[in-house]
Length: 367
Image 1 (tube, helix red, strand yellow):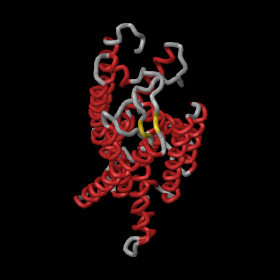
Image 2 (cartoon, rainbow, N blue to C red):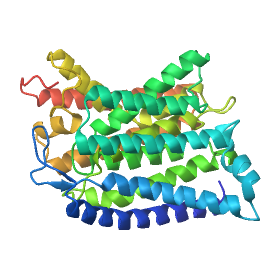
Image 3 (cartoon, helix red, strand yellow):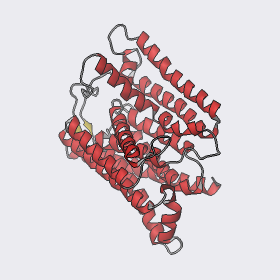
Image 4 (cartoon, one colour):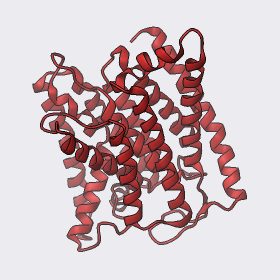
């Protein structure tokens, strides 16, 4: 990338960060005024009612910055419609405008689903159906995971749908401590930014990532321990949807450049939420509980039970996400031997975490 591109990315990051900082402060005041609060109960660890509209600030920032600049470029005499569809939507392939519309529409849908869940607490089945509908919009607009043996339309569509729903839920499940889900979302987005191949037609993907990092980062300033506002399901599910979408449309490997194993980069970028999801499902299943039953057996909760403070647990998880994410960022630049070394090291990190937490479990059966 050129210096001008880095400066452009810095501009988008600073703009979205500043806007999100301001909008999150406004959202907090409105949530308090309108009594849109998350009250302490059951498996929740906060002890006082907490404003819930942080997700609205994230999503509003993202759409204002993206749509505002797209409209300005589209209407300008210097660039116009042809430039937008050719240069900005080129990373989406054919029918780039239609696919971008699908991405943005799906984002609005998952946000609305999250708002409904925040206000009325949907059943797991209803929430899952809504997430599947959002995934179908993405697939229906032409975006599918097509690699190795996932090449026919039916298989690739099914795999894409499963992946999108999995990542949405993983980011939502990770939202269980102050600053945790938002911080991991920023780290994952930064990993994707480093992973995506530096081709000219990928410029819009990188712009979307820096806008997203700024939008979530501005909220995170208000959400770090002790949190002053929560993002709610509307924010956590939007974050998961966006990261899943980027992992589908981004280019992580091209023939003749590095190893084909580089397509596993999204797994490392999202390793922390995926580890949390699969480990907690395993624990619930082993204990004979419903896998849909909320509890305090997530990655962060188990670290606290092992002796960490809540704040230390959050920062430890940030560290794990960053270390494994940096390995993921290297995958597109390594040969086959190098990629397998990175994958083995990443697996070793999580195996070590499991062993350490098991040693501190003291027979409680949480691992």
